[in-house]
Image (tube, rainbow, N blue to C red):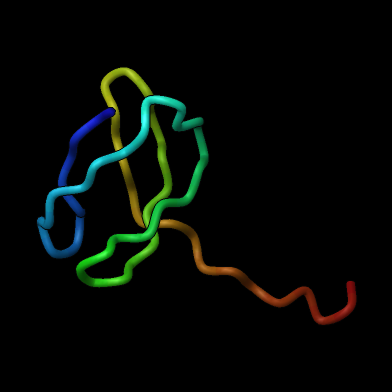
Length: 56
């Protein structure tokens, strides 16, 4: 189990040891989505917004 803080609200996040790069994790406190950007050391950044492709 890995432990870090939410980038937005500073809440403590417990992340499983099986986490993978680019996985999106949602903060239980504020609901923001965070993307795993590095595994060692564990680093999170705001997840990119999903954009519509308008049928392309």
